[in-house]
Amino acid sequence: MHLLFITEYYPKTLLGDVHGGVEFRVFQLSQLLAQNNEVTVIASQETDKPVHQKIGRVKVLRVGKKRAYTRSGSIWERLSFMIMASVIALREDFDVVEGSSFFAWLPAWIGGVIRNRKKVMLIADTVENYGKNIPYVTHKGLTVFERLLFNLPWNGVVVISKTVQKKLMNHKIISKTNVIPCGVFLPKKSTRTYKTFTICCISRLVPYKDVETLIRAVHLLLKMGHHLQLIIIGDGEQEKQLKSLTGSLHIADTIVFRGFIPGHKQVMKVLRSCHLFCLPSKVEGFGIATIEAFSSAIPAVLADLPIHHEVTQEKGALFFEPGNFQDLAEKISVLIDNPRYRNKLSVEGYKIARAYQWPQIANDTLTYYENLLTY
Image 1: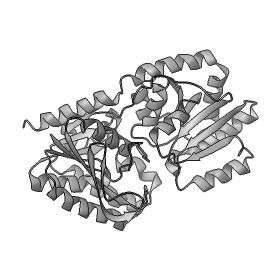
Image 2: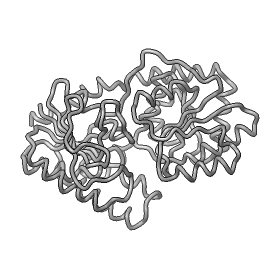
Image 3: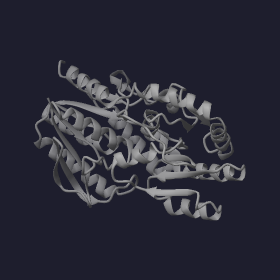
């Protein structure tokens, strides 16, 4: 089978230098599926990445105006990507095309229709979920565009969680949705190297990820007498602001900003050295980093969101009121003071992670696509 993935971003090495969950999903699935299938990826052209590239067995074509990675803005560059991705898709021979991100949906649909091939939409979340985090006019425009795309005749729709699936109840594509989650690779061994109790947060530094709440919780924990440190992996528009906050709270020596780490193995190495994982985000489509923490037998403290309850099955984690740093500090304090309880959650989380393994998810994805070809 020849599979075509159209996605906004794709890493440039097998190290998995990714910025977000959708990019990571496409990377892992494309690499696994390429072992026995022909796989092509069309992505946007980025300033530091080759236009044409072979990564493992995956052919990567980068198109559109060259630009740096961004989660917002770049309207003209994104429009350029959509146009050129549509053109390139018409030149490619494929059996199934997946539009793996918001700005990849239309090119995938156009390519599938004109080439008379099966077309699949991957939905990691809806625009509605980000309404409070983007300008009103932009939100309305993207919502209208999203609804138009939802009404197109897709052959299949993949959603990464039941939580996302429920958001589509009022759209006709709901009947075509199939839940296929994101995954992890289970490590052979997990070790702790930090003697000081260490919390890890893997997150883009943008408003809706709400890393500020975690920083304020750490400040409160220090005032409560706890000895700990926080490691933050990720970059984004709020980095300078958050560093300034740690300075004003006089806790800059307690919080380590690691920035973007170009290599998934290196990210996991840092994560596995920590005692606790925290994801304070107010908006999540899945939360791969939570399952990665579980795969290393690391318990988590998560914002109380429906998606987190679904993914964790309410095991391996404690939940706090989103945006409430006092509640977050209280939950973390419980785990610092109670190693036995922390170990119990670690065992629970590891068992949950075993249900989210990439090889099985790749197999489920391939089976779904093969079934689409039968009708």
